[in-house]
Image (cartoon, rainbow, N blue to C red; front, side):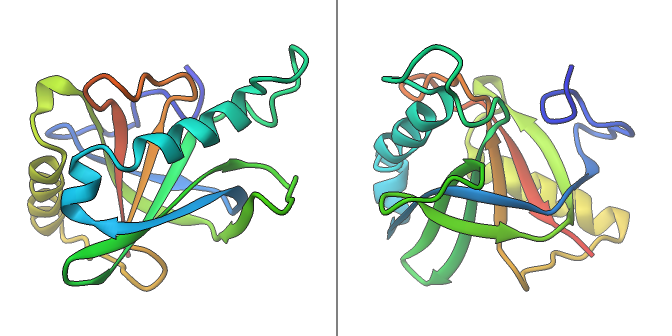
Length: 166
């Protein structure tokens, strides 16, 4: 498997620490409440970025990047958050916002339907981080999530959960 999709080394209790290189992501920003997100409000944004990443509507092979769809969240208000959804690229235009992400370390775990609720899985990750002596680094973002490029956003979520650590 590739560096993005494979199980991270050192997997313990379903969690591990991975590093991501600095990268420029292009995509779209969504802002809303937690209940809107739980109700599927992010799905159209994810689908638009997915179409951009797979080259849908373009000639075959015109995809910008075959890596994951990346979601970056900032929990910056009590009732909701901002969420950037993008793919790695330097192709910026009026419809796509760029976001430069520095190299970072993350606590991580794969999440699928058998893991229950995403929020509960994050809580388990935070408990694991505490046991491992890791601190949540909220200085640049609160969470990073990676979705397979060809994810089915109408199905139960399947994604890599990531919390920045120091």
